[in-house]
Amino acid sequence: MLFSVLCFAIGRIVNKKHLLEKVLRIMDEIIYWNQHETTLFAVEELRRLMRNAGYECTITDSGRSSSHIENSNRKIHLITTNEYHATCKDKKIITINDDGFALFKSSNDVWIIGNEARSILYGVYMYCRIRFGYEWTRLDEERIVDKDIPTHEQLYIHEPMFARRGNIIETINDPNYINALIDWGVKNGQNEYFFTFFLWNDIKSYVSSTLRKRNVHVTLGGHSLSFLLNEIQEKTSDSELKQNDKLKFFAENTKLQDKVIQKIVDICMENEVITRVSLWPEDIGIDEKNGSEFLPTYIRFTEKLKEALQKNKSQVGVEYIVYNAGLSWNMLERKEQMESSYHVDVLYAFWGRDYSTSIDSNEPKQKRAYETLQDWNKEAIKKGRSLTVLEYYSDHFMLSELFPPLLTRIQQDLHDYKKLNIQGVLNLIVPTHQKRKHPEIEENYPWKWIHHFNNYLYARIAWGEEYKDVVEEYFNVLNEDKEAFQQLFIELEKLISQHTKWNAPLFPARLVDPEKVQDRLNYPQIPLYLREVYKRLAEWDLTETESLLAIQTKDNLTSFTTKEMMLIYFYYLKEVAGIHAEAWTLEVEH
Image (cartoon, rainbow, N blue to C red):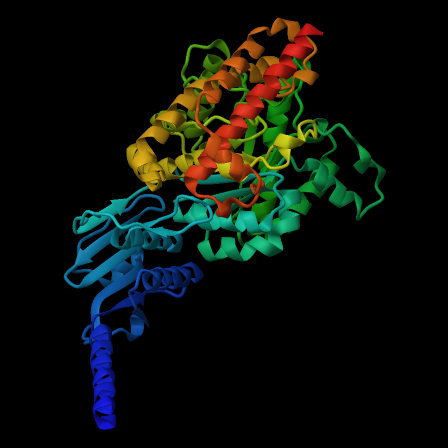
């Protein structure tokens, strides 16, 4: 009896050994063709994703790879376009624009080909989406979806819609969140992250490795002039550094400019991940008298900065911003005699837009802004430079806690910008403005989850994916409820985006700041609108959220499903509309 049991056990071991040998015989082989840090990270990611999907693989340097490895079922090559053409001259010629990639099948070989190492990483993520069903929709989740995935043709090429695609982060000092955002963003085709100098100073030691591994572009700048001046002041007693008029800085005091420029050069030389500087004027308007001279002197400053970087043999680029700070058209529009630059690029930002209308609508302010955009872009192209648009799709200050999902607006905007030959679109992320006036809303409002829907749509469409596919992937997790919730989001966009038309008239207040509006009697339609929003949301069945709110906080997003977070979002929209409808009514009555 004991002998029989022993033989049975040995037989099982032998069978398992044969099974293991069989598995090893069909194991994939990842072959990498260069030692770039991002290529090696792409290898690491491909191996991780394959193993999580239940597939083992080996890893081989191309110099040591054999074309006759018996236990390799499929060879997956990670290679740049130049390496592919130089090594595989008998194979198909591959042409890829910008930082796109190609997936090419040739007998038993799969080639993931990119113009640069980051493009190879994009190709790895797409390969894993196609082969294994991976999805990266939520920031906190990596899913493998069991679905019918069509077999792609022998050659699949993906090219981005825009050369610059990424997020602007000015004040969010949360390294864990930023690292997660970068990781998620690259999986969804982003290639740039923009930080203020002061935020970068605080987080660089935490995020530099994440950025470097993915070889993404890093822009430093924003409203950082005060920070740079303070940094200089700490190291000198020169009284002239104490001037407070930051707008005059660009037109006067060239000695002070030189010190700021040197400080920027020093920061750029410290870290190789920095690829661009975009220092903006202070966020205040300028009058007509001084407006005509401001932009030319500011542009000249950015050219001086570019010259200083080049003298230090730095490849860091420079751009200037045209932006209606304080709703000042003088800081946005180009005067007829004003020349744009041959040496630095343009960042265009129009604050106060009505997001219920398109960029080419006939609303007077929007029409003027659209004409200004076309003018600057025409000038940039004529001078051999590029123009990038700053958008506010994830800005909780501009869009407020009555935050609209912008499905169709983002889709239409990006295609409209593409038609204009705009080279890039960056999306600004701004958290909620804490007023400590309504703690029941402010303490637990999940702004990171709420803005992420817009950022997801923006990232995927700017990367060059179809709107229908992007939306379907987001809502598929809801199964039989997906169509109903998609229609709710479309309805919310139409209803809630309307309030952005009051951003400019109420400036610097917003719809959620009735206490800051002096002429409240001039806006009787606002409380009526807010009551309409509240009434519509009150009709929705949100009973499921009551038990969830007891444990929901602004950061425990992983504790809830997508459907639960949607219901929580609807709840906050209803509460924000109700609270401010009452506040506006009281303010008007008094």
